[in-house]
Image: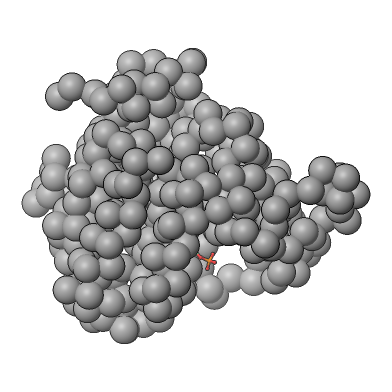
Length: 306
Ligand code: FBP
């Protein structure tokens, strides 16, 4: 497979990585209908852990079947499919080599009262299952943030040594943040920047709102304003926080919403220079044909040359 100039350029930003990790990053970047463009659409299905099975799959019961989810990612021409151990194991042989996979190696659940995650997979599992990357969530701001970052450090180092790529879900939450703060622009950018500093290859954050939340940062934002009212400008600020675009950053989809709002969000991500979307519920909670149409429309937005 010949890499596109864009993908070669992206790989050149990862100056310390070994050929195995670069190959796995290239696999994700070259897969699917957006292959070679530097943009990505990824399907994450760890909501069964995070929110429970009924809340996740009740709206479209076909999605209880792990094979349905693999096929959705493959048939929609996505760049990768991310899921916890059991879900990947359940389709590992049938779909070996069909779509790059990201093993989500830590997980939370809605029965817990703490803002923490358990380590639920290993680098060995990822290698055994042929995954291209591991995925790990941190909650900057939680009481457990430092332990989470330390766990990430260890697993990321092991993954990189083994030639895998590393994806971080950086979701600020905890006692110092209210609901507005969790997705405020400054906090999103801060969380994304921490993901880059921790050495992730791909950073996943929620789309930022126009709020600026951290008191200590308000003065700086006042003196050096960012156009907070424009969604693309907000995305561009998060991209800037990811080493000025030298790290890949993708934005999550959130609860199932109207197709128009998701497509507007994709347009803003595209215009702001983000690398794409990682869309779970908005994909697998819709009936398959509707999901396929939505994912295809998103892909068309990302295909437009910047
Ligand atoms: P969605 O597109 O369904 O929002 O998925 C993105 C995601 O990061 C999932 O990987 C994860 O399960 C979920 O969001 C967690 O959301 P939250 O922590 O806000 O409950």
